[in-house]
Image (tube, rainbow, N blue to C red; front, top):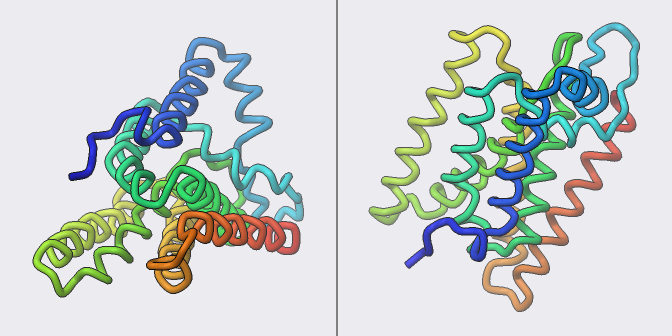
Length: 221
């Protein structure tokens, strides 16, 4: 039986929730700190302006949120999807998946989105969602896998519809993170499942995707 989420069994998931929430609280109580955070960590989408934002922002965007509901939605999703996955693949591999998905979401948003400023961990969260979707698809012929796939598919349909109903949602960031999550989970399935040192292999794959995303960002934004 999978243990319930706790720091001891899923330290990275819990640490991300604590750090991200703490950063939001700092910005909430101090407008000056909030201004500094946005100026230095938010993703600046260049659009057609020709401005080239610092590449590190495709990752640091995941630390910031535009409001309490935005923060609660993403951190609750991380609490639901993160700990169990971390317990199964190991904390280093989970960390690489989270960062790679955040970076892929930030990259696609910066490359294709309209000029503006973006904040939020949605790219990383959709990476976790994508990884679980792949797992559910692989298990779709079993009753439990089929039920999980249908539930995740329903959630996916809602999230696809949201950008058409709620203005300002950075759906490029969602899409980039989701693609990274599915892709990494697929690579894990091919190269790590059933292999000796599977957790180390997963970590290497995740880090390789982080490097690939970073290099691509230097080339395209």
